[in-house]
Amino acid sequence: MEHFKLVKKELINAVEQLNEETVLKLSEEALAAGMEPFDLLEVVKEGMLGVGRLYEQKVYFIADLIMAGIIFKEVLELDKMTEQFHSNNSRKVGTVVVGTVSGDLHDIGKDIFRGMMEANCFEVIDLGVDVPKELFVKKVMEYKPDILGLAGVLTCTTDAMRDVVYALKEAGIRHRVKVIVGGKHLTADACRYIGADGYANDASDGVKLCVNWLPKEGRK
Image (cartoon, rainbow, N blue to C red; front, side, top):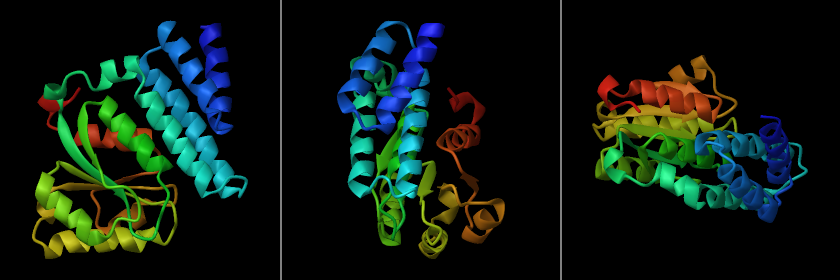
């Protein structure tokens, strides 16, 4: 237990410092020592949130956010992680389309949410960042997902999220999909303004909400 506590602290620091080699080395060692893949994901998520805070403090820049996203994806692609999360596609419990809305280039929160949704046996179609409302509508029509996830860090993205929901209504498909919006700035009032079914300020809470939206027989 004490060993895992030490590894957790070292991992969080390595992620925050964007030390790719150390993050992967510690992750592999932790998995080999018996740490559960989902627990490792939570630890890396904590480090990623630290990167986000450093960006907000203007210590880090866009390139650093991109690097953090690369490191996160590499952890997800470690053998023991893929064995746990991607070994049996037939076990997928639902489909989600996710993207950062128009006007926002941030993807750390979205990437964490995507990874955790995949860990919970969802099929995830990631549209990337700065996604126009038209593309969200097109992909909802194409993939017919159970859930649409709209991410945004900037406060101005509230209106962009609302525009996506309105575009779904205009296309006559709003009733077909649950909409979750994610971002630190969101509140219950903002969620109602947007017209979403739910919101989350943290990726873990967002995943729990999505799982609860599934029929009981479809839950992990």
